[in-house]
Image (cartoon, rainbow, N blue to C red; front, side, top):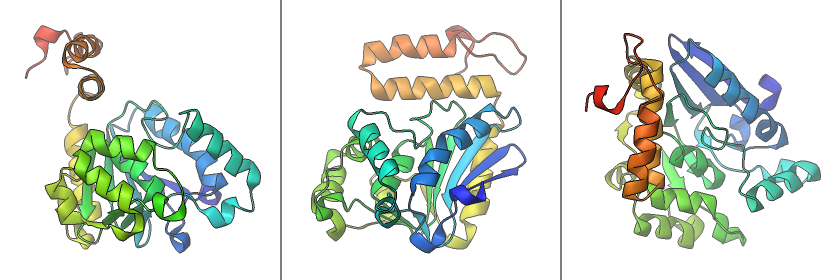
Length: 254
């Protein structure tokens, strides 16, 4: 899928989704946005893939929309605007209904729409060279879905600083870890190895159990406490343990 600006690799039980447009900071053009749903679906459907890592090639992780390319592709720009307006984005694992756990390995600059991939991942690690910013307001645009995800994953104050100050506010990797946006910071040269290790640790669980637990976690994030409990029990009852037995709420170890 080289022409789409995306690459798929596999290392044992771990599938890798790599943004591969380093010359433009891995920004998304029409081809990349169109290809993302199929790439996510391919990785999610592969029985040998038990965890997915998403990262970027080169010095940037993901810098949002490539407005230069999209200005020459009005059809793709209109479609992206329609999806944003209708809350029908098809960029991330969450947008595309992916059930395989996802690790986001932020290798460099993560800006604007790139934040979608961070806030929708299950686990996030970052290179010590990573930075986070949301420049929408600086160019007269609104940050809606990224802002909502930032609030859900961290604190309102953190989201407000990024969203309301725009390009003037850059969050370094260690500060992002302190604020809860990132779970771990590692030296740049160790990022890929550590992401693989973390994904393999996730992959060690029975896939059905891992997916059920993931659904339970997201249910707790997206619902009030009583509703989350009901959704959690439903999610856990749909899996199987490592012996192939159906999982019920009482058979899942805490």
